[in-house]
Image (cartoon, rainbow, N blue to C red; front, side):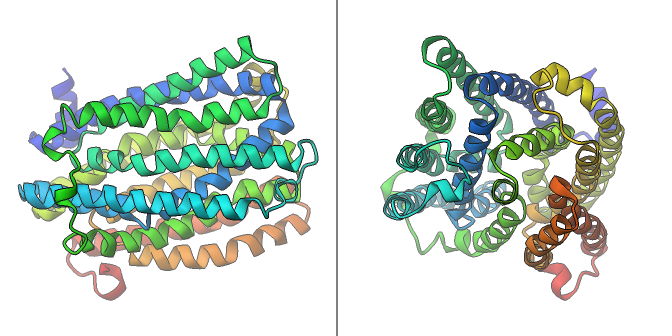
Length: 452
């Protein structure tokens, strides 16, 4: 039955389709479980620390996450180049790519933590987080603890790129689910065995869970499924791994721009409105991007499949798969409308109405989600084949205009929705640009910037 459904959707019966469809099925299940757990955790955490403290945690988490882009694009470079090496059955270069990536990311991680450790002591965290609720010394301890565990997970997350390159998305997704269960279990222990309103305990749990799970997952996988690709110093060859950095460098610049464009939102909210509004904005965004996240996570397995198909000039498979993805996107539109109509009922059930976003914020976040998911269909393909220069220019323009536009709309009295309007404008422009680029590449008439 599953095979017949797969054939109807993809229109072909080959190993790539079989791998992708199996990965999509597992991705759908694990993503649904992950999102369910994340939604269960929110009211538990709100009850443990309160609305303002939760906003502080979200802002700290957002700030620390900025540093995840400091891998200089190594993860993306490894994923694409390793996928090509495996498609060409070049095991030697695959081992060099993996071992060299671990060596480079380890060095980056150490330097990054030491630099942050030195600088953090000179920062007024009360000013950064726009709060006097917690003393600066306590905030410093919290931030350093979170960043320490982040640095550990930062180095080990290269495992995810390896699994994606090998199209072992199911394993990668299971690791994510285990991490979520670990976090849920830890929160339950916090609530039942510690005093409430302890932000440090919360940050310790959330900060360490990814590092702990990745550590044990890496130990297990490199002893079993990935034993032929176990990192080894003898395979470290920086010179031969330069292609990872050259391709990854482009991804890195794009990631930095994307980070500024998206991950800076909570920092802007905390500065313009305060930590309590961070909670409202974050929960509204989390709710309205529920289907968008599910859509993107389900599509992720096709990233490496596009790389393989394009390398082998299988354009027929690419065309059929893109048509199928666009049909799935229509369900995003329908479900998003349902989320908009039912948001008050959901928030009353989810957090007992303690947080209730405005109608305008919900509507425009829904419009943004629809536009961004449509665009992501085409950027998924473009990232898979390494054609990313045009994305750089669109991201650059969007990044330069984002904060000025946010301030303009905020001065005009639009409140929290000021952070959404500019993103909607950029998303609709990108819809047009990247759809055109896709067809130019597939029709063989992409010239200049359209093919870089």
